Image 1 (tube, protein in one colour):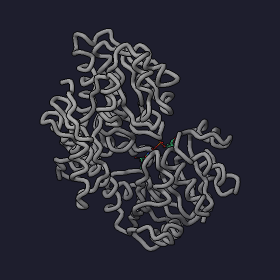
Image 2 (tube, protein in one colour):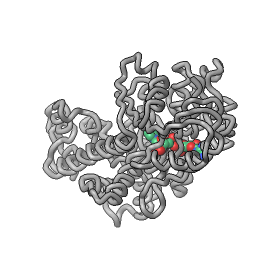
Image 3 (cartoon, helix red, strand yellow):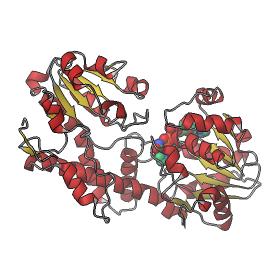
Length: 453
Ligand SMILES: NC(=O)c1ccc[n+]([C@@H]2O[C@H](COP(=O)([O-])OP(=O)(O)OC[C@H]3O[C@@H](n4cnc5c(N)ncnc54)[C@H](O)[C@@H]3O)[C@@H](O)[C@H]2O)c1
């Protein structure tokens, strides 16, 4: 089957490469000339583990190609996926659908055979109806059906997620749409990945409901972490204690600096807008959005406190380890590091940073932060080291070396990567998230460690 993928970003490129790997003939289309030129020269526009090899092998076997020409790219395609961005609209937080509608218009104008148009972008309920209206208004001479097929892949594990999904959700309103989608996903069908056929509106809402629910889970454990700090509990033990309950599950119960990334922040906001438009409030999600926003700056204040408070912090220097919203991606969209760096700058603290993949994208977002070539260069002369993203490279830092080159041995671990007793034995003042930092804490081995307030 020939598939066209309009939009070759994180989702479009991964999905396109995986569909090609399933044996389909895929054309990835993007209006960004530089991106397509890079892809044609074998260079990846994003960092995603395993993607370069997957693209290379499928280009070599002529199943995957790239173009900026939409008319040429969609010609002969039975499935035309829309995988363009749907960022928050400035001012009101509604999903900006202008890119999706622009593609619908172009597809309508150039449709040269019967095709199913599949919205893979995350779009609010009712967007499929509008895509159908726009294409229909172009009076195409061919049959078309508009289907919703939201994507659930996680950056950093995108290829595995796409090839072995927990489920595939397809919102189709007719047999033509359902039949073509069954063919598109046949290889996964054979793998017994559950495929859920639902209405288009249910499918659109499912994506938002999934992301909002996960955002609730993260925010819930983050608030439990704050409470643990006050009462002297250990949030990792609490998370384990509740996560082993199958009704709750252990995933997304890692306390940290607040959720970020290209999906949760904008999708929770867009869901609030939909709820408002339909006069059906989702108050839990409203609270989650507020709590999470406040948390990112609170993490900056936690670092200021570790430097001795507002008066003492001015003029000091912090090393930030990790900038991306999570490891194994270069995506900086809405990363907590941005708010943390801003809070530190507001407090007169200078910041040096290192991230294995995210510094190029981070630079324009935090112009005052000095980007360094490795973690130790960032740590040199620092009054505190802040671990923001749990890249594997930071899990085994040489504490003795850090102590020798930093100005002060202070480690603020916003991801609970380190064992408190291990770091404290190395002579550090150690602060983490929700592990009883304000009172005596019982360590995992059962020892009592005296902890700085
Ligand atoms: N990133 C993720 O982890 C993820 C996961 C699930 C769902 N999604 C959703 O998928 C969608 C895409 O997200 P992304 O992260 O891949 O975005 P992205 O910004 O990385 O990529 C979007 C691409 O679309 C291209 N584009 C825009 N308008 C175009 C047009 N008219 N014609 C051709 N190309 C065009 C852009 O140049 C860009 O390369 C969003 O709706 C997002 O919410 C993202």
